Image 1 (cartoon, one colour):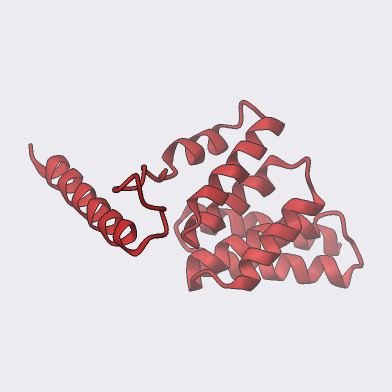
Image 2 (tube, helix red, strand yellow; image 1 turned 180 degrees about the vertical axis):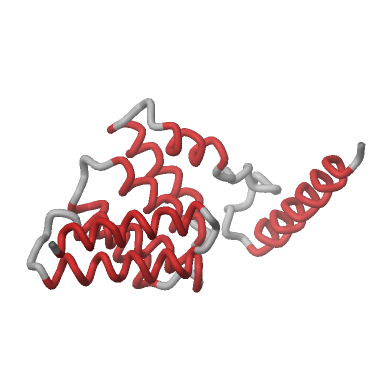
Length: 164
């Protein structure tokens, strides 16, 4: 009975995410996780934890707990590409595109035809080369100029896309 209720709460959470309601999704995923724990069932806990962490990060911002929970779920369920997808999405929300790309690539090694992983990987922002190549990427000049370059590119792409 609880497994059925947990599964229903999980499906409701997925539908809430599709509707663009991550806070409602997080509440449903939390319910699914709690029901699974109460029933001493561990079969789906990692999946529920992964989705709960992603939706919580989307709704309320990324926390270290969200990142750790997604990392734990992905590490303990290495053969599930959706865990890598969720982990990558949380990394993107946290501003860690390099880690996100690594998670997407790991998921694609597991499931090369996974459309959502491909789309996430292709849509992830990749870092360009340092503005001043002779200086380390972390040098303050490179950081400031890189931020400026990024802002200018984003502004020019918005200007180009708004022109008829």
